[in-house]
Length: 149
Image (cartoon, rainbow, N blue to C red):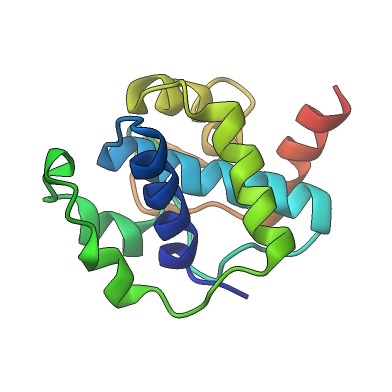
């Protein structure tokens, strides 16, 4: 199993390679969305870090606390490399690229809106008080429904 930085590193790489803008919020939401689809397809977590329901949607606190002060316009992402521990398998690399291709056109605000609509795992967990852990079972169920329409 990966950590959230392994996944974030791939999204940062793709954004730089394609010249697509990145922000802290966008990176957080992409990493969360990838985790959701991975749970739905494989029935196992993509990464081991916890996900919490915060005011503006689901947040991966470990990732948030590292990237919250980063100037994404500087293209200096060495901080993620420091925390990344694993290289993605070929299949998982392709999986992350598929998520990227589906969601790269959205900015952080748009992705945030998608992740805290009515009926989302965030909506079912958030009770006006941040830092409540979102259960992977809720995330898996939600993304399986998205896949199956």
